[in-house]
Length: 205
Image 1 (cartoon, rainbow, N blue to C red):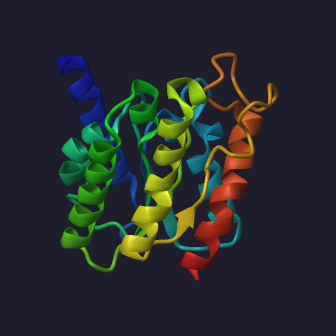
Image 2 (image 1 turned 135 degrees about the vertical axis):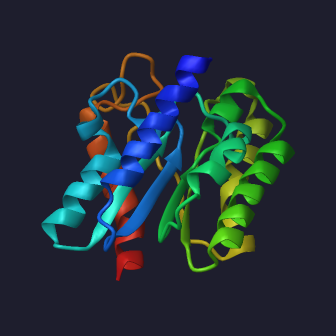
């Protein structure tokens, strides 16, 4: 546990120090999908978004705040530390692990709402984009359908841009998903980057 804490602290500290003081920041705050589990960090979709930003000459720096295995409750516990510096834009991609574990849906929604509240309290000007998640149907159709409604409800209640289903175009495709069936391949991350960019690009303007 001590090693984990030190590693995480070093990661975020390096990210903070690496930022151009004049650049606006985009925080991708999520789980293993954002972290790029199973692929090189340069192949994960946040890095691909940075490449697109750089190619357009936009003055934004992407911070990958993904943590493998993260739940909405875990995200809530670490959001204050992550917000030591103001973020101009945050893409919130959490909840998938909650669904895989069958966590109570009301708790997941409440945790995500509290994360949103904390970000807005720290800096009301931060633009938050919510990434919708989906889960396999093994917990039953009712749970699956109710889980998917969490994200459009939160987006509407908080007036946030919504990426409807961040994994929608990669799930079930063997070329786009790793053998575990849960995490995208490098090609899958390219598809996710396209999905995210569609919603993110207008916000950058």
